[in-house]
Length: 208
Image (cartoon, rainbow, N blue to C red):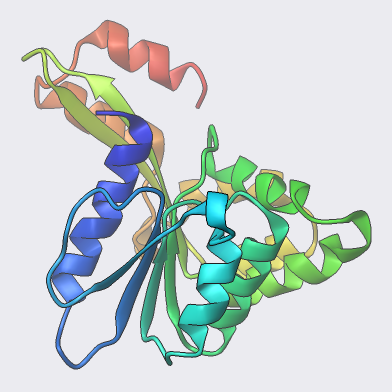
């Protein structure tokens, strides 16, 4: 199981928890990996012009409550997703980054230079939280997930607006009362429970 599938499966788990006949929940995927009841799943087919962005524009006309996007890899998709979130839609997505503090810069890297400031304000206004996952080899030959959690508090939003994304790590370290978790805490918990080796833990934590 790849990291991306693991991350997307986490989104699936979240959707399973909230799915209801009273909610209009839509996913945009490439490909659709699991079939879910009570959820409308849209397959991206770029060969015929059905891109993530085009699918999102179509979905927004259907008055969705929740949108889950398989991956945000272009500026148009990111902008549409943030605009949807600003209107009250719950938007979930995955993105390949090495740590939470790199997330903002990765998103901004897709935008034209003249739009980066606007995108920062959109992101600061819409963001609710970020979960960064590391899939680790376990002692039982399986896999375990360690995670770092950022809650988008006012302090976190201000850091994003001020272009101080590198300070997000400090916010996570001091944000336990808000439900934030550091990667070090998560890895050490797996280590203390005897689920991973000290070597695996050290290899991960050298980056944190």
